[in-house]
Image (cartoon, rainbow, N blue to C red; front, side):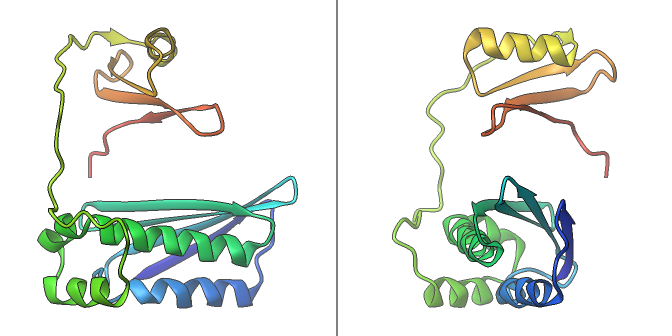
Length: 178
């Protein structure tokens, strides 16, 4: 797994970088060697936020944790990624070697595993997707009191999604042409 570590508003020590690589190495046997792990550490108001995104064969796993100590936040985020992997083992079985994943699941049991591996869709909605600006889409999302809103971006005619982030700001999802 290729690991990229970035610090925002903070200088990262070599021992933290080594610790992050060591903790992420526990996922090496699950993901291919082409997998990319991005670790971003941000300092804001004496609180450290560690965000890890693992991309492998079209699958994306992301977790973040905030704590007063960088190492504690790293522990929390690696644990959260482990839980995500256990929860989504059925999806991963299609992408990676099932025997390695099963070994990992047995070694790291979870209380809330989805053993069925199936997700139940309880409602499907159809609605017209009209071209609009990003700001119009955010306004529409707020009017509907939703956490996200899908629309056709009038600038590039692509389907985009705006969403509300935990910190109260907004995000925009755009398709990648890769």
